[in-house]
Every structure is written in structure tokens, then in C-alpha cells.
Amino acid sequence: MTTLLDLRVGHGLEIGPLDRPIAVRPESDVSYLDVSDRSKLQAHYGPDDNVDVDKIPELDFWLEHDDGFRSLEDACSTGAPFDWVLASHVIEHIPDVIGWLRQLWQVTADDGELALSVPDRRFCFDLHRPATTVGQALEAHDRGDQTPSPRAVFDAHRGAVDVPAERAWAGDVPDATARSHTWDHALELLERCRRGEYVDSHVWLWTPREFVSFIDDLCHLGLVDFVVDRLLPTAHNDLEFHVVLVRLPAGMDGDARDERRGRAHGAALAALPPERTISTPEPAPDPDPVELLQAELVEARRQRDRARRRVRRLQDQLGDAGSARRAGALTRASRRLRRGAR
Image (cartoon, rainbow, N blue to C red):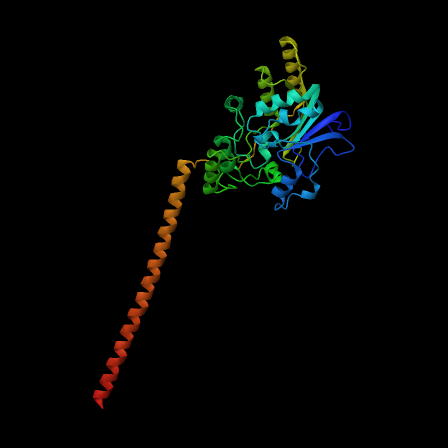
């Protein structure tokens, strides 16, 4: 991320730093925003061995409020405008991604930059899930989703599989039955979602190319005034790509906006290498009918020869038993004759 954005220049906002902020004070003039204040985050993540709660920084803004939750725009408006905004592994969790981007536009300076680290759906636990569609994002925005939808919650927890990025890159991909969550657990989370609870999920899924096309469509629709300016595709054996979007200035006319969008996204797509698809084990081809018949014939002959050998062994055993019985009878008769002669 730091190769795409100079965090030493300008006034910035980092969203969701938790215990590993990317922009660090005092090297960066940065404000931090999260869901809750530091003490509540420490209490929430205290049992989690993956989070060092002592390293959670003091937060400047948080969404939680006495009456519920504020919008991002309302929460950090006193610190705006920001020259840059940084969010690592955040955008994929946002219930209404269009609304979120529009709020960020409101708190970012003209030509300010939005830097994102985004999981590549091909190399993480989402690898069997289909790509996000613009239509899904439009639907979530029209509904004003404040929590992940039932669609997102069920798909995320029914479709997730455990696979390290290195295995996914190597094509050693578990099939869709190797699920991370049981059916009952997925249904439990779905019901919690339907009751209005916030069930954290990966709502949106992209590859680098899909992300550029997604932003391009939203910009073309006039819903988002950001364009992709720079992008680092997913590195080998890694699971995330990095992208910097630039905020289009307020009041930009339609023609200039379309020209900027087309130029930026055309260049971004042209710079990206072709994307490999997920390498899954090829299913066994349907057997040739002739080969099947030949195999059946070979097996039938093998079974026939085996039966013949068994019959011969039984005949030999019966023959040996008959000879022994006849010899025994002759011996007994001879003995009787000898006794009678005496």
C-alpha cells in the first residue's frame, strides 16, 4: 500500500486500523476512525488471540453513538476534508458500498485519494463464490442497507472454504463441499441477520479487473465520483490487491467527467496482466462405451478363469477323498478276512 500512496504528505484518515495501523503517528498526520471507541474495541477483542488490544491506537472518530450509529460522513466531518483516506480490508464488508463511497467523497478533498487493500476472491475463502454484480450494489443502495443482507450473510457463510493463498495459487483448491461452516451454523447466522443483527460478512467480491469495471460502471451511472488511478495486482502467493482511487472535483461537467473516467479506467485495465482463473481439479471424463465393454469382457474372463480353477481344485479334493475312502474299505475287509481265517 505504501508504494502507491505517500502517507507523509497531507492530512489523512485511516478507517479501521484496529491494532495494526498502516499510517503511524507522528510520521503521518492521520486521524483514525472505527466502529467504537478504543475502550469498547479493547473489550470486544480482548478474548481474540489474533488482536493485541494494547496496540489499538486512540481513535479520533467512531460510528457508534448514544442513539445508534452515525454515518461515516457525520462521524468525521469535523476533521474533513482529508487529502487521503486509507482502508485495508474494509470495503468488502460494507453493506451499502455505493453509499459508503459517496460519503467518502463528501469528506475527501478535490483530487484527494482513497487507498484500498482488497481481498482477491480467487485466493481467499471466497474462491467458490461468484463475483459481485453492479446490480447487487444498486439493490443494496436503493434499500439503504445498514447491515449485510440475508443474501450476503448466507452466501458468505455457506460458501466459504478454508484454503491458504499459497494453495489457491498452486491450484490445490478444495471443492465446494470442504466448507468452513456447517449448514446449521449458516442457518443460525441467517436467522440472526433476519432479526436485524449485524452479521459481519464479505458482502462484495472482486478480482482486480472486476473491481476496475465495477467502479467504472458506478461512475458511468453517476453514482460514484471516484476513478481508479493506480493499482497493484495480487502478488504471487498473496490474497489481496491494492488500489488508489482519485476523487473527481465537485462541479465537474459531464463530458470532462466521462473523458477522465474513460482515460483512467482504460489505462488501468491495459496495465493489468491477464487474470488466471481458479485452477480446480478437472473432473474425470466420461468413459468411452467401447472401452467400458472391453473392460467388462476382461473382468468376465478373469472371473470365468477363477471359477474354473476353483472347480478343478474341488474335483481334485473330491478325488483324493474318494481314493482314501476306497483304500480304507479294502484295508478293513482284509482285516476281517484274516480274523475269520484264524
